[in-house]
Amino acid sequence: MDWSARKKIADNILDTAGLTPMVRLRRVTQGVKPAILAKLEYFAPSGSLKDRILPDMVREAERRGELKPGMTIVEATTGNMGIATAMTGAALGYPVLIVMPEGMSEERKKAIRAYGAELLFTPGGESDVDLVLDKVRQLREENPGKYWEVGQFSNPDNVNAHYRRTAPEIWEQTGGQVDIFVAAQGSGGTISGVSRYLKEKNPKVLTFAVEPAECPTLSEGKWGSHLIEGIGDGFVPDNLDLSVIDGVVTTTSQEAIRMAQRLAREEGIFCGISSGCNVAACLKVARQYPEVATIVTVINDDGFRYLSTELCGEASSLQVPEREHPAREKDRMRLAERKLIIIR
View 1 (cartoon, rainbow, N blue to C red):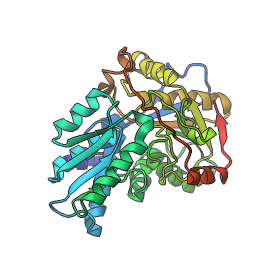
View 2: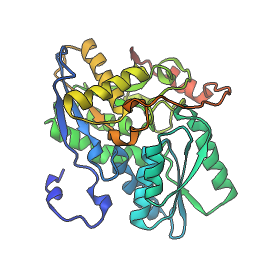
View 3: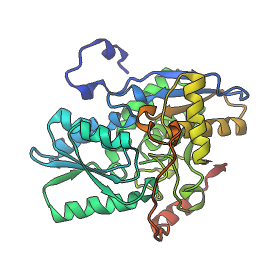
View 4: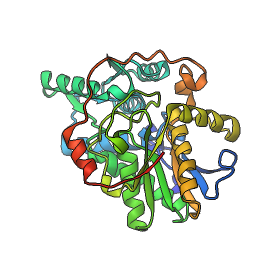
């Protein structure tokens, strides 16, 4: 990776994404033997790891002729992808429509609007992303040729961006000394792209996906509501490559919130709830694998987009719609084909 790029003047805000620092966690990791390293993705221009993938996904769509001048970029999201999409649209001159559950944090909504994007809401929260995807599908069917959908859950450019950019940075920063990679399962892009690269470099690397204990889709094939924004959407995304995943770690919403609070108070890292989820999962993995030297994870975003949430002491007012949410048949089939290590 060309780390000297940080010393140069960028032609566009999008060119500043990536090349993020990595830090060794010291205080929250007392009592476990492996070193736990965290890659700080909130150093990205809009504050999350989603900034890495949007420029690549948009430029690839332009190259293929899928995205043309005058079209509107539309995306289904619970927040970070929406903010990154809004920023990218502003930088490149595309109008943006973000569809998200109404239960997401106010900071996310305000950030999206600040970039000039339009917001459309669907009922529920993080575990109701299927309703968001249905709405985007409806918009595209009713307005052919008007929208280009980013498609973070199914567009392989998401995975490829992490394979080409995030993973090589991790490999270089650690000097190739990665034993285990731990990442929350959201769109599937980060964990699939990074894991594929690391396993190509060293087939002995283990990878663990992290999911909310209240929504154990990968570990139990079940759905449930939770408070960890950005992960645990209640289905297995097409972009999640189970062939490069060795196991699953479940973490409760309260475990994730408490760890995010500890990271701020004990490490000086003010991050979001899903990042607390990642680090809490790393500690569980470290206790199961005390013989390994290095565990790497990702700090997905900063804590400033969670000021109105339980992370900062605000009671949750999330209203989850009462409805049936059976597991998809294709999800059951995919999970049945892959035996995963489960850590709780």
